[in-house]
Image 1 (cartoon, one colour):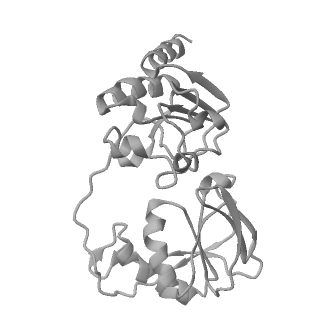
Image 2: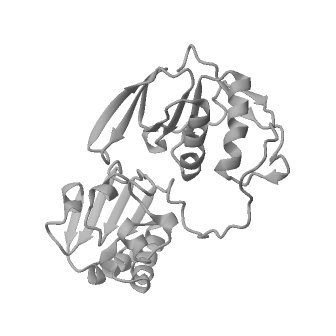
Length: 271
């Protein structure tokens, strides 16, 4: 794709940064990446538009004095990129003149690569052993046996219409299990404490594009639509017939979710 660019995958020679384990801390990773980017003479630095990349790449860009281009959905050539702006309401075509281009890409906009099909070389990196500014203490991860939200083929998301965490779990989890789907949530539901932050779908959460996306009790604010409008089939259940979600839904059901969703769950189980 980048005929004039140097393509390689740099692998650090050590998993530690000086004496402190990296553990995904962007403050500590950035100097390590910058040192290897400069040493390798790389022209393009690309990462998925993930929470980790959102933390580390802006720091890398600043250290390289390069302007980052975020959430790229299409690559036209080695210096021209397409990305959504204003929560997806407009599409910008950006041409970068920086010597080193730093990009994050929206994974759902690109076809999955075939394992083993890459031609880039893997080169050993270097550890600058710079002083670490942050130290890893601990982590508390939400665990689930359900499909991963970012890659699931089916997603059922709940919104503020579920009214409480107890109702969210009671209504949404059985439906997800019956469909074999991942569970998502709107920002309103997350902010209200109904669901974990890791389940948030939207402009400030995860961007998903499953084969089927079912929105339950979600009005359809533009920030939420930015995270799921590329789904192949969108279904919605909401008691408000004028809810914006119905404007993008392929299938809509107007009704009380506390009645309709359990009924749908039972019908799916009986198939």
